[in-house]
Length: 239
Image 1 (cartoon, rainbow, N blue to C red):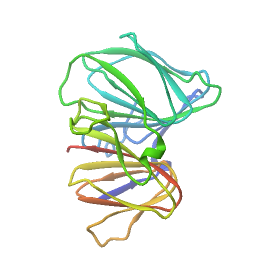
Image 2: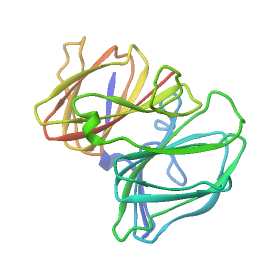
Image 3: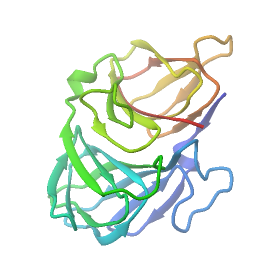
């Protein structure tokens, strides 16, 4: 099953300083059919105005991954961490037993990012934060793991969840296949239009436009063909 969720169908809230679109129920937006997908609980498509951001606020018992598409975001937290994560980079925060943090756009231009929340394997634990670059060239023509709850994914940022976040870039006309082996997936094109299909099925492929979401279940191998130069983000989780 591949369920396309067009960008226009997402929940939305424009606060002036923040233009947010929600793939899943979040804050005042609630859709009983879009509460979570496996252990994936939140996928927010945010644009933060220059000089604006989220003031200090608490989290607990959630794995929070920030994928910066354009601009940069500056993080500070109650552990004393401070860091600037720019386009092409990823940051993760394991909220664990509790952490207070802020996220601001200190740049002179808007910052566009995906904020992805995955349910942890277990509640509690010491909170942590980390960030690292993932050059887009290193993702050319393939998915690489950006954040993972599995020890075998060396080089990825660590999260405490049954899941992983992957990224890829494709040139127009390029096709790749990615094995899900029946795990649930949620795919968003940060840039460019692609078609996606179950490689083992005969159904016609679906079109995924920029910033659309695709909820994927019961698929062993996913086939993706870029219609334009594309930048993709995929979350895999257990059921």
